Length: 487
Ligand code: HEC
Image 1 (cartoon, protein in one colour):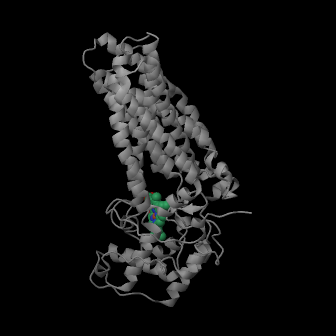
Image 2 (cartoon, protein in one colour):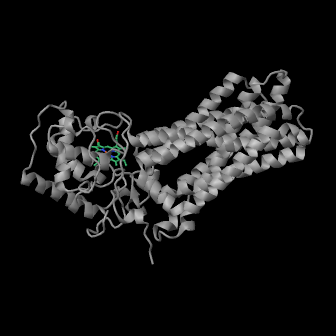
Image 3 (cartoon, helix red, strand yellow):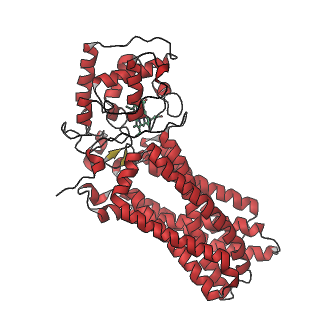
C-alpha cells in the first residue's frame, strides 16, 4: 500500500517570515553556502590531520607536529564555533521560510538525522579531546583521536548528503513514500558524496597552505615541504570532473537542461564554478604537484576565496535545478503538493486549492494591512505571500514589479494562469480565479506606485476567462515539449 506523508496530504499554514528586499529562497541559499563551505573544511581538515599525524609518526616530515598544533586551533575555532552557529541558523531559517519542506524531511528521516547527530557528537567529543589533551598524549593515542574525529565528521556528511540528494532525486521513494532507504540511497547519493569528499579535501588543503604561511619560526624550505604534502591531498581535484559528470548524468533531464543552456543564470553559475575549479586544479596539479612551486599566504588565500566561489556556484546550481520543487514531483517550493494534483477531493492538491482557494484557510493576517487601499489588494498580497514569495519579492530580488513592469492587465492574468507554462521552473497557479485577479491587482497597484485609492475589480467575464486559462493550463507541472520522451 502506498503511504503518503501527512505533510503531502493537506495544506498546512505557518507564519512565514519576510526578509525585505531579499527573496526567501535567497536567504536560505546564502546561509547554506556559507555553512556547507565551513562544514566541508572541517571534514577535509580531519582527514588532513590524520595524514600529517601519520607523517609525524613515520618520521617523514619533521615539522608535521608543529603544523598539527597550528592547524587544529584554526580548525576547531572555525568548524566548532562558526560551523555550529551557522548550522543552528540553518534550522532556524528553514522553519521560518520552508517549514513544510523541512517538516516533511524530518518526518521521513527522523532517525537518520538522529544518527547524523550522534556522529556529530562523536566528532565534537574527539575534536575537543584532541584540542585539550593532545600535548599530553602519545602518538598512537593522538592518531586514534584524529581518526575518530575524521571518521565521525565524514559520517555526518554521509547522512546529511543522502537527505539533501533525496530532494532532487527521491528515487524509489517517489512510488512509495514509506521506502526510506530507496529515498536515502537515491540516484545522486554516491556521485554527490564522492564529489563532496574531494571538495572537503581541496578546501582543507588550501586552508592549510594559508596556515602554513602564517606559522612562525619556519624556514622557507620547511614551509615548501609542508605545502607539497598538502598538494598530495589537493590533487584529488582531478577526480572532480568524473563525479561531476556522473552527477549530471543522474539528475532529471529537465534539471540538466537548465544547466546546459535552458536557464542562462544556471548555466553561467555552473560555468563559473567549473572555471574556478579548473584554475585551482591547474595550480594544484601543475604548479604545486608537478613543478613543486611555492605558494605564499596571499596566493593561498586567493585560491581559498576562489574555492568559496566555486562552492557557492555549485550549491546555487544544485539548489536551482530542483525548481519548481523542494522535493521533486512531491512538493513545490511554495509548499503546495505536486501529488494528486488533479484530484479536487484531495486536500492540498492544486485542483482542490483552485476550487476552494489557496489562502481562504490561511489564519495569518497580512502585515501592515492598513497600507493597502482595499480588501482585494490585501487578498492579492496574501496569495503572493503564500504562492510566490519563496522565489519572488514585489520590488527587490526577482521582483514581480520588474518582471512584469511593461505587461498589460490581460497579459498578467493569462500568464499567471499558465504559470507553469510561462516558465517550467514555476509551479502551476493554485488558487481560484478571484484570488488570481486579486494577485494581478496587487501587482498592478504596486507597479503604478501604490496610489492611495484603487478601484476593486469584479467583472464576471474576466473571472470566466481566467477560469478558462487555468483549465487550459491544467494542474500538472509544466514540461518542455522537447523533453517529452524523458518524462
Ligand atoms: C519555484 C520558484 C518560483 C515560484 C514559486 C514562482 N516563481 Fe515566478 N519566476 C521564478 C523564476 C526563477 C523566474 C525567472 C526570472 C528571470 O527570468 O529572471 C520567474 C519569472 C516570473 C515571471 C516573469 C516571466 C517571464 O517570462 O518574463 C512572472 C510574471 C512570475 N515569475 C510570476 C510569478 C507569480 C505570480 C508567482 C506566484 C503565483 C510565481 N511567479 C511563483 C521562480 C518562481
